[in-house]
Length: 171
Image (cartoon, rainbow, N blue to C red; front, side, top):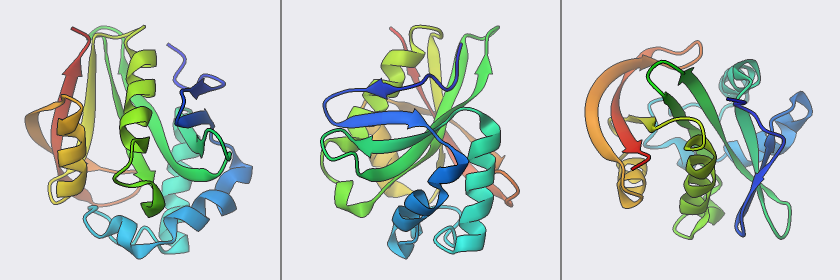
């Protein structure tokens, strides 16, 4: 499975592989403290903390820049990671969208686009969602994910935090 295809797109969003040159445009979205208020790392709006997130995204070779399809405006980022061929699974996560794109169809369109691609290669997709991130928990449940576990997760270079594990299967 190619974790970073050249582009994935639907009527709402266009995903392109994240590049080093995307830092400033993506940080302009991420610099909003309210984006991170329920996230395990509430300081990710700070440039040095976001730089660590961005470095991890680049190193993952599965990260995407999310563009609004019509305007090509940068609206956030997400990634595929932890592909497991034996278990036919992978994770989708590290997702954030600018607040202007909350409460609309962008998150659902993003997950649908990523799931449609992933289910060509795997039968199960998992999501790590911070235990305090009620907004993201509700959003993932809206698209049919179910909570299956709790786990301490260490994001790239960050402290372990309690995450809920959600799952969606191809069937």
